[in-house]
Amino acid sequence: MTQSICTYGFIPVRTEPFEGAQLETQILFGESFDILENRTGWCRIKCHFDGYEGWIDDKLIVKLDERDVELWNRPIGHVVTKAFVKVIRESDSTPMLLSSGSRVVFNGEDRNVIRIGNEEFYWQGILPDGRFDLEEVARGYLNSPYLWGGRSFYGIDCSGVVQNVFKVAGVLLPRNASQQINYGQVVSFVEEAGIGDLAFFDNEEGEIIHVGICLGHGSILHSSGSVRIDVLDHQGIYNKERQRYTHHLRVIKRVIDG
Image 1: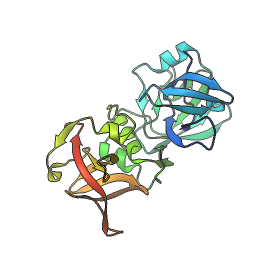
Image 2: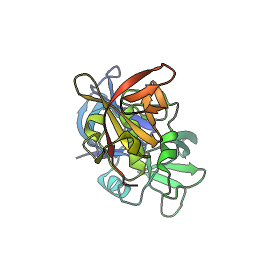
Image 3: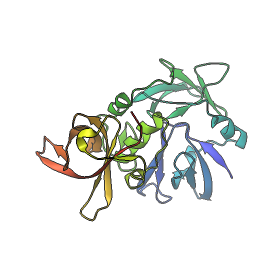
Image 4: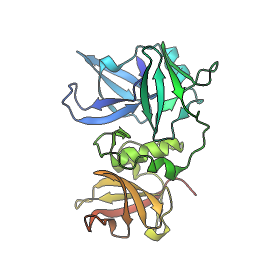
């Protein structure tokens, strides 16, 4: 099966093979995927990271051999922890921003060179050292606009924030809130919620429609309009600006033990 790796800040993945189709998710830089089907100008792909499938513009696919992808997916890669970092594409000397959650593998001969097939990128700034603070990673998305299917600081949805932040922590969560709720242990009381616990919210039909990251002390970081911090209590999320509850709390789960 043909495989490739994202060499852009992100690649939009759509529900159907045309540009006007709904955004399903995004593949971040350094994430690999299978190419399942080819259609004029489009490819149906499956992401290795979370198994999501959809359609991407074939002009955004770099041609690689199986060995390129195998080497890239070795466990020596680094996940970007900052809200964004800059790399320079060697082929045209242009800058590109990588969002938190992107994955990089450095050339063993040169610590700041990233090579994917015939493409080389030069890392700018401080090199990653594997250390991170979960709350700091989450706060890096603050003020990013809400975007259905988004996974970058340019635009991101509620479950995208959760998935990316936990990817940095080495915890691979599925893409949607309705799937993420199946992970972790229940936190019995909202007062016991600590930094990194996940709060899930439902609609009148009981369907899980929203998720956010608890920051402790009755606050929650979530993407609603934009990535923001609001009040969390036993009823749900209270938006002080709008002076009303916006989301009904279903359950709080602890995925990472403190």
